Image 1 (tube, rainbow, N blue to C red):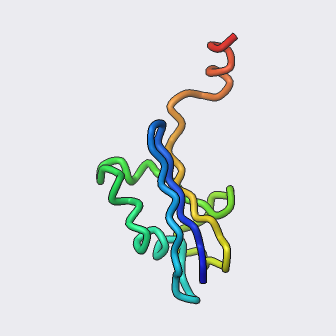
Image 2: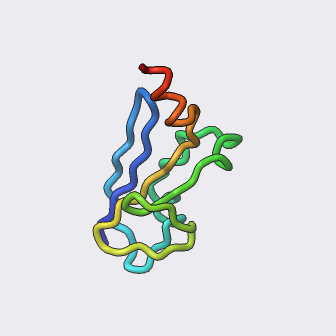
Length: 86
């Protein structure tokens, strides 16, 4: 099945297309994509993961066309960021 794995930093993005096995979890897709190789081991515990914009557990089964996303922690509260921009 065809899926996408995406991960973005401020200055770099990864968009990886995978032909995953028919039965594949979110965690397996991350391993197959090797996208976490770009994350320092000590920072991995701060990441969360999702499918098509919704946070999901790592054992969630994927479906054809899913977009697996790696979420970084927010550095600034969005409300505070808006206040600073005004």
